[in-house]
Image (cartoon, rainbow, N blue to C red; front, side, top):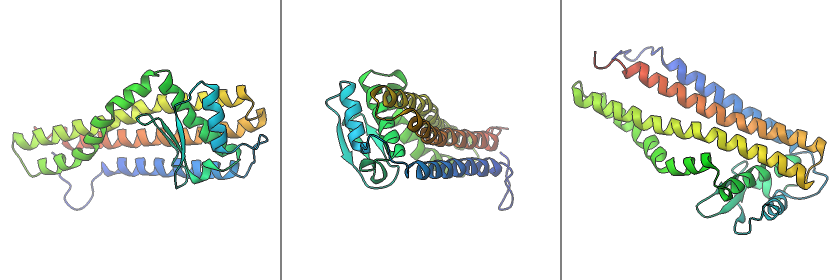
Length: 234
């Protein structure tokens, strides 16, 4: 295993690249949301009202809509069939808020239709959560051993981290599909007009980049682990 002491670890550049990508994506989505959060939708519907209309038009009657605190903390909970909208979405009548609410409705529709990638993502959540929590402790403990035990612990840790990376990758088609559903539904129902949809697409496109950035950062971190420990048996 390469050892760089307390000085310079060249593989750490992969972590830095991943962090920069995530920060850039996060900044872009915040700026884009802020811009279109100032554009009021012609329908005058709030995010919550738009979500209710979309769910009803899709024949979904068993999903509750709840208000949660925070900004852009919106999400759909398939276990309890609850669509949670944040402060920046729930009561806002902006094009951005309606778009985000519609995106979350897209997840509820995926759930209704048993969309395969969503089912796969839900199934691997426990394994991904365990892998994310256990990976680094296993790797750190393994570093204190020079025997096969240490190598085994490190390899198990890397495998656990791979489960978290897999979750990130499976998330991508789920999020992109939800955004496509949102744009289509908003247009079909007339909740947003043609020009308004352009703004919504930009908001959802920027949001999608955060998932791409997260997946890229996770892959870079996994590559770093493989570079650091891949030759430990030598």
